[in-house]
Each structure stands twice: as C-alpha cells, then as structure tokens.
Image (cartoon, rainbow, N blue to C red):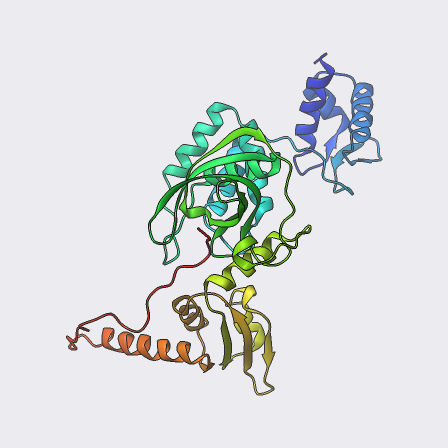
Length: 355
C-alpha cells in the first residue's frame, strides 16, 4: 500500500481494535516493511494518537487513552450502531442525555454516506420505543437540525403548535437546546415577536435552516424579556433561563415527603432534579424541594419509588393523591361498577413554552 494517507487511515483503523498488534503482522496486513510501520506510528503520534510500543523480540503496538480525544475511525457497522443508539436516546428526553449527545449525532449524520443513512433510518423505523405516559417523542432529525443551526449560528424557520393547539410559523435565532430529563426545549430569540422564547421541541414541525447567519444576542440574565419586565442582559445560562420561564408558567410545588426507605434507595428511583434527600436517622429519609412539574407527574414518580411514603405538603398534592388512590382502589375491585359522572380532581396542566 504505497498511498501514505490511505495507509495511515488503515493502520489507525487496525490500532483502534482493542488488542496489541505485533509490528510484523501490521507490516504484513499493509504490505509494507516493519521500518515503514515504525515511521507511520511516529506520524500518528505527531497527530495526537497515543500509540504505545512494547519491547521484546517481536514487539507490538496498541492505542491507549491519552490526554485528549483524537478523531476516531468507524467502520460501517460501528457507525450505524452509534447513530441508531444516539437517535434512540435523543428522540426521548432521557435524563442524562443532553445537548452534547445531540451535537454528536448531528456531526455523525453529516458525514454518513447515503447508504448508511438509509440503514439507520430503516432500523429506526423498524423499532417501536417504550414511551413515557405522555407519549411525547421527537424525531431525531428535528433535534439534529436545531442543534446544527444553534452551533452554526443559523436562523431557523419552523411550524409551532402551542399548548392550546394554535399553529404558527416562527423564525428564530436558536441559542441552545436544553433537556429537562422529561422533554427537550429550544431557547431562541423570536424575530417576529422581538423577544426571547422557549419552545417545546416535540411541538416543533418542519424545521428548516435558512442559511442566514446571525450574531448571537446576549441572553437575559433575569426573566424572559418584556413579559418579565426585565431589560438586563448578560451571558446568561440557557438552563437557568428555561427554569425561570417554567416557574412563571406553572405554579411551583414545595414538596415535603417522607419515605420509609434509605436515602440511597429512594435517590436511585427519583429524578435528580427533585433534589437531595435527608436521612431521618430511623431508616427513612425526607425530601424537601421545589419543582414546577405537574401534580400528576409528581404523584406517579412518588408512587414508583416502591416504598412507603407520606406527603406532608403541598395540600394540592395530598388532595390529588387521595383522589388517585380512590380511583386505583375502585380499579382493583372487579365487582365495583362505579363510574364517575365528571372529571376527577384536577386537570392536566401544560407547561414549558412561551407563545
């Protein structure tokens, strides 16, 4: 193999297999001399790939962890597997899967050959995800379009459906994507409304990057623009901005809950954003936290902890749990044909957007 760049890529591909390669075997695979292999190893090291050599009569090379992340080479099967995995995670706002995952997916799909894109799409369409109760899933292509536009500072056009069903067309300057662990949100400057807005990504349709570049505006430090009565600006933080936006749109719940299990047991079964647990010294623990999640969602998450618990507050959560408990009790009695004549306690509340 006389083409040096092609030979280096082939050598790197071999070294990325987790094993030690004898120099003679590498030379045979690439049809070059051991001396050429040594020179190529030196070139890879100069490019930042930490190749370690072992001494001995045969000698060998292997790629080890270094101080920085060098570019990786993926074969077709590896690329498809990673793309499918990233799409599956990105399509559902799984806690811990954040904007970095979406950026990685956007980069990978940008360089995937068309034949591999087709394979990824076929695999994606052939699988049925197990969704959360609200069923809010997202087309990963929507996420990658938004992420690429935000990274490239490119204006976006998209159709948007608000909580009451109103459909509008928006043109925005995307700032950041934020995952709450339940949903994805886009923080952006809405050009038509001349103000900052947050958009639930599962309500975004037909996103299109216009190609028009923009200079990022400073994100408001407090509030969400004119609606909040604040004109102070600064570098800001998209997650903090989103949290403030949610607090304005949905009342804050101040939770006070006792659990009959250890803090470690309960923490492993509750979302991290609900806060830290305090051991009570008697084998139980207590949660004192504030959140803007719906009563329904909080009640179900508490029940899924799978241990005894007692809610001291807020009163509306106590009332909802009583109503939910009564419904569940009736559901467990086959002979009970009671049918409520009207809606039960509370209505499902929408949150997380600004129209």
